[in-house]
Amino acid sequence: MNQNCQKQEWELIAPCHFGLEAVLKREIQDLDLEISRVEDGKVTFRGGGEAVAAANVFLRTTERIFLKVADLHAETFDELFEKTKALPWESFIPPNGKFWVTKANSVKSKLFSPSDIQSIMKKAIVERLKTAYGLTWFPEDGPAYPIRVSFMKDTATIGIDSSGLSLHKRGYRQMTVKAPITETLASALIMLTPWRADRILVDPFCGSGTFPIEAAMMAAGIAPGAKRDFLAEKWTNIISPSCWKQAREKAGDLVKKEIETDIQGYDIDPAALKAARANAKMAGVDHMIHFQQRDVKDLRHPKPFGFLIANPPYGERIGEMEELSGLYRTLGESFSRLDRWSMYLITSYEQAERDIGRKADKNRKVYNGMMKTYFYQFLGPKPERKTARAAMDAGRRF
Ligand SMILES: C[S@@+](CC[C@H](N)C(=O)[O-])C[C@H]1O[C@@H](n2cnc3c(N)ncnc32)[C@H](O)[C@@H]1O
Image 1 (tube, rainbow, N blue to C red):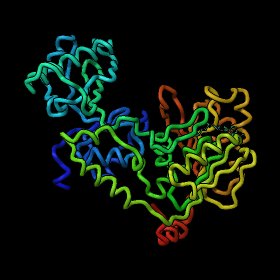
Image 2 (image 1 turned 90 degrees about the vertical axis):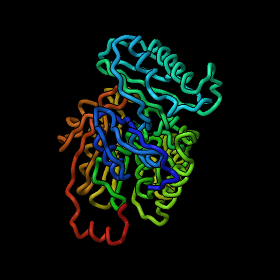
Image 3 (image 1 turned 120 degrees about the vertical axis):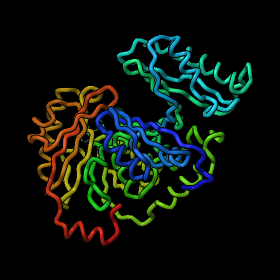
Image 4 (image 1 turned 90 degrees about the horizontal axis):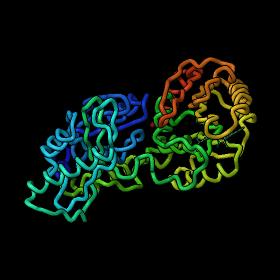
């Protein structure tokens, strides 16, 4: 651990899609960070400035990184005020810091009005900082410290958002299509599969290209946050700029220049392909992906053991329900022509397995926002060890 970078340590909270906590946990462990708790929709871990920077720059499957301030129990606004005031806000917010409770939500709790929770907490923090800094007025013209509070059964979890723009905004999505999957969800789903950079990956409904682009970035070792800024880069009172410099340097070192991949994205809509190509270029992976306009009925691939990963039209958002049945039947037929492939689909279409004509080997419920979806996994056989071994020896695994 670099002493220049590390000033103090916190509990850090990383929220994720419900159902994908295990993927995020593994990613955090891969950064050598210590997990303290895994709950529905979030993983809590420990670390200092170095961890905040690494988590923001490297984690592919979380939306934000919060510095946890406290868990507190409050059933009345008086209690909320007094307990919020008792917290050491001055150890996070400097005298010129801009602070406000940006979002409050409440589940199964006596305090439930977000606007009241927000204004009472703001007043309490002001009172605390007045005493701590001996000031009566705060200019709030310095760095921003947006606070989030989430009540569950009368316990409020309070955190400060270090990310700013949500982490799914990697900076490459310049053009979009209808119903794109978020980058964080796409990468989490890819990580749930055994796909590795030396295996074939095809998304026959690629839209703006999210699955192929996320896969290519993983294959090339490109950190999702390498090209963007984070709010906490301005928190020089608690996180040294050297933490960010180190994380960015490490991200640069990990990029693999020479990498062979077989990643393809198809879509029937030429506008989607235009977006996909522009986005891939922006992400620096256009040379690694072959995009082509193609109807799923014409899906072919000459090689065995590939991975098909997609979010086909759902019905709720695009495509008419009655057309879906035919589309999923066509997908099932195209998949059955592929030699020993695996197929992974995220969809909320309830009749997917019936129309595809095969029951999934595994099925996982995943919440895409408020929408319940299923991640259907149709597993093909594994290639012989010899094939995998040869690829590993060639150093093409990531
Ligand atoms: C839910 S969107 C996929 C979004 C994509 N994952 C993204 O992140 O932008 C479904 C896509 O399927 C495409 N599509 C619909 N029917 C198709 C067909 N018969 N063959 C190929 N693509 C089709 C649509 O044009 C749309 O882009």
